[in-house]
Image (cartoon, rainbow, N blue to C red; front, side, top):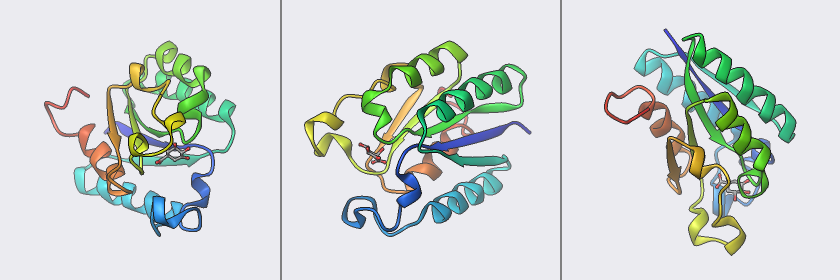
Length: 151
Ligand code: DQA
């Protein structure tokens, strides 16, 4: 049974206390429990990690690429937080490691500040889920399991 990796980037450890009007009341622990429950329901193991450090995310994406190549991982659900809008290193890691990524944002970044409208990740992502709240994580996991989604 190949797994799915959920990566959360900077400041997502503050979910629940950070701008609840934008991100809602769910904590990161709630999100990770939701992801694992969705995986269990769909018969796939889900692993969750969070870091505030860009290099950790690069390392984990490279590791994910090796796991995908070995047939042990389907892909990564990635909420890169603000690195989405700034990090060429994350984009290069996704491309370089050939890892299938679903880019995810809890909020609708396109309805927010202009600087959130551009993503370095989108051009190398398999798909994008934006603005559906924390339930977007469950939908992203489903996308790696449901046939015909291109993942
Ligand atoms: C976010 C949106 C980003 O613009 C922001 O920097 C985040 C969270 C989201 O989940 O809506 O940290 O990725």
